[in-house]
Length: 304
Ligand code: ASP
Image (cartoon, rainbow, N blue to C red; front, side):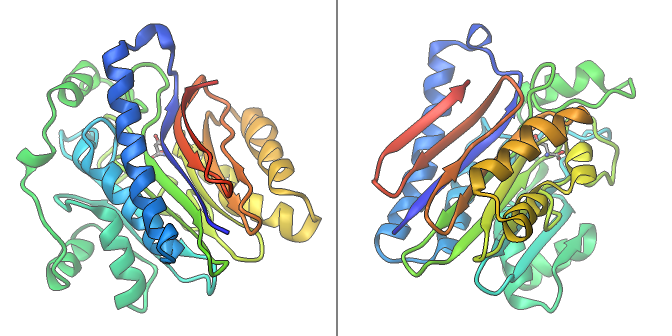
């Protein structure tokens, strides 16, 4: 049994704000990432490789706020966060506040496999990337006129914005179940426009933006990071399943539509369990998302 789900961020996504052409482009990016991940699973590959490859594709697609498409922080720079986790043995790796790393998800994987640590940050993560031969790119690679404009509009204020207008979030992620029964999750983000230099969101924090445990589920989140951290989102879903015996569907509903809403935590997540059941709940207006379920049925959606 194999299945995969991906997301490209949640937020105030309205059909009225989107052109048909742009919608097609977003969907194309999602479809491509989904196929790349699914093909790995179809060939009997591991879920950890499927989620890494799907996120890698999304990081290279400039429309999503991760890797190449990352937003600008308060210093006009890009600081990215990413993490990856395997459900079999709870192995995990993450990086926070990294700049000039072409694909932060690859660096997170290297932290998991090539160090005794779970989370490396900033300059130390950068030095480690050079040691293990992870691709480095110049600032120009990450420059994007649209993102720069978003930042210029608010750079002299204390405001920090989730990706795009109003409350649109941006981050990418994937969760998968492979034939061997293993779950995995990965998440990558540029964070929030005009975020303070050094700010770390939920995405690189294991148990919050990303979590995978073969006994319960694999989860990747997107939304207002601070509120997701305070709600310990991904692990909370796993705990509700493990200790309370809830189904994935029940656990996701409680966390996304009740707990998060109560503290104003806007966003969503994708999750999968050992039976290949997929949940993609969000309490914002939309969430870029896609899935291929255990029957091979494909879904790509943006709005409610
Ligand atoms: N969760 C991310 C962060 O707070 C942003 C997002 O998902 O859009 O950094």
